[in-house]
Image (cartoon, rainbow over all chains, first blue to last red; front, side, top):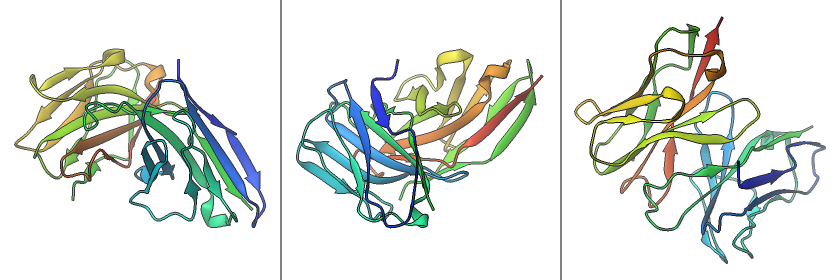
Length: 115
Length: 115
C-alpha cells in the first residue's frame, strides 16, 4: 500500500485563486520531491527538499512555492493560479541513505485545472 | 547533462504476445537505472532497478530489463503480456551527473494490451 498521500486528487478552480496541494508521507523519508507531469512529456522536477527547513527549486521553473516544517509534510502553494498551471502534480519521497540509487515512492497525484 | 530517451510513445500489443519497451540514456558514467509503471489515476511505482552486477534485472509482474553499457540502453521486456499490463512505463536514470540525488525521467511509453 502507498504510504504517501496527496490531497485533493482533483481540483478545478478559477484564475487568481490561491491553492495549496497537500502531500504527506509516513515512511520517515528525509527527501521529498514535487514533479509536474503533462501528457507525453518527461516528469519535470519543480521542487525538492533534503529535510526539515530545506527546500530547493528544481529544473523546471515554477511559480509555486513549498515548505518543509515537518518531515512528513511537503505542501505546494500557488499564490495566484493561472490556466498555464493546469497539469498533474506528483509528490514523491525517498530514503536519505544511498540517495542516488534509492527508488522514489510516489503519491497518486493531484490533477489541477485552472479555468 | 544526462538525458533519457524512450523511443516509442505508444506500443499496442495483443494479449499473450511479447513486448519490448526501449530506453536509451546519454551517459554511462556511474548511472543507476530504473523502470517505473503508472496505472491510470495512480502515481508511479517501481518495476525494477539496475545498480550494478548482473546486466539482466528481474522485476515485479514478470518484467525484466537488460543493461547494455556499450549501447547505453536499458530496454524493458516481458515474454507474455496481460490486459492488466496496460499502463504508462517510465525509464529513469540517476547518478553523479544528474545533479546530485535528482532522477531524470523519460517521457513515458504507453503500453496498450488488446484482447
